[in-house]
Image (tube, rainbow, N blue to C red; front, side, top):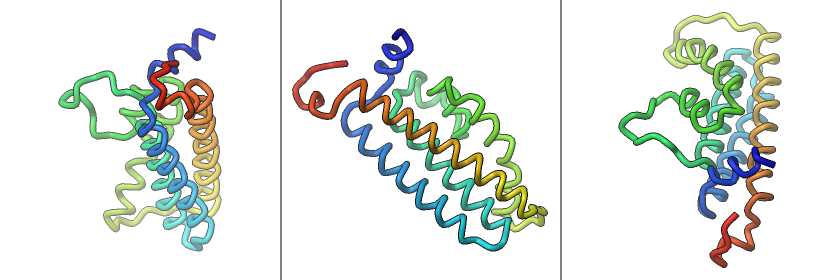
Length: 152
């Protein structure tokens, strides 16, 4: 019960719930696009973008606790700070950031089909966890209460 109370305090107002859902929907679409990529490097990159959208959904649904000038620009650092239950995910994706940056810069990085598929599966699991968080946010503060001034 105590975990629910602390999470309820971090949940953003009504606009913050619609934006996270839209970001999660975009992440899901990107992940579906990744399946169709034959080149494992492309599959990895598109799945990474899906993970970034998932992180953005969590960040949009949580209240930032540090002043903007002190915040990192890394989505993974921000994710770990905003939602401690996602620290392992943040670390996992941060470990793959250099590969993503190299691919984006056009540098040669070998990624096998097996590696791309394993990464895809991890992104899928991450997005399920994001969905669970957003679902809990909705249960903690029902949409019908947003306009009535009732707080969670």
